Image (cartoon, rainbow, N blue to C red; front, side):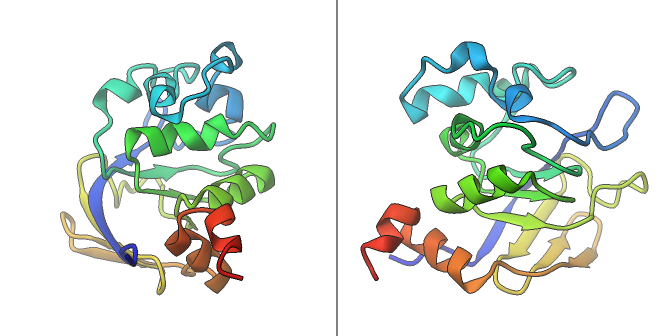
Length: 176
């Protein structure tokens, strides 16, 4: 069964206490190394952002279907797969960041977690937490229904879309 190309969900914008985008969120801030003993993906979500100042209660507030709006260099650091899997555990359906750490980007794509690169987090607050978004993964169009504003970015590559549709890289490889 094909996965949706158009995703609709609540925006959750990751900013600091002053309202500025938080850049350089590394994998240890996303999923702290003290939880690396956890092996079941469904148990990982509760620890998401447990090491990110101001966001320690994220997992309690996250809702299935949320779309995260993030700053630059999201997922910098190690190749910690749990930093991707914790979002899958929570049912986060899409990450949109100004940019991603290279290893994080590859891990997310391989896991079938949709990600888009777009510079839409800014101080004008054209997207705020709670806004309703519709995102077309193929065209890269991001509609903020709450504020009646549209952003345009590059959609997912064909290979990224194929991996997403298959579920993850291993399932995609079976189709080759």
